[in-house]
Image (cartoon, rainbow, N blue to C red):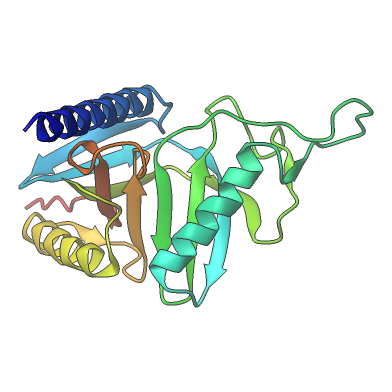
Amino acid sequence: MIASKVIGGIVGALVTIRYGLGLYAWRVSELLERPKYSVVEKFGGIEVRAYDAYVVAEATMKATPMKQATGKGFGACAGYIFGGKNRVRGISLKKTSRSMSMTAPVRIEESSRATKVSFVMSANETVRSLPVPTDSSMALRQIKPHTAAFVRFSGPPPSEQRVAKERARLEEALAKHGYEVRRPEETLTYGYHDPFATPNLLRRNEVGLYVAKKRTWTV
């Protein structure tokens, strides 16, 4: 009886610590810089957003399943922003690489041709101010201002099946509200929180599509 109580107490303490650390990780992620956007419209759990321009460090994985591509792409992007796989521009005798701040979300753009995993760069950075990637799979890219629609859900990083399900839901809602998908061959998947430390209940995932502005009809 005493042994079982001790074991129960230890398990309870470990669970408390786990969720305490998870809550801390969630709070830290919520403070990370994110791309700027304005909300155009909301309907049926869908949010349409108009994004300002921003820069990403992006890894391209061709003809690779989403789960494998995401892991490889995340590793390449992490290597870049933490300074292990980049080179500062110009001549520097003191420092040949530098690290950058973590931001959110981690972006995935998936098509039949490739899976692109990218980290958003800080708003005070440009393609020219950032160090050059030394990993051949990495590139810096300016994302132009655009409009995109997203459906949001919690849980672990979504599987391909979950992404397809949420995309179908999104397409149906957009069609009902007069939006046109601009690049139907691409699906966006955004993750805002650490998949290891943050409890699944608190993790924010989004599946999105680029859309054209809502049509307005005049007589």
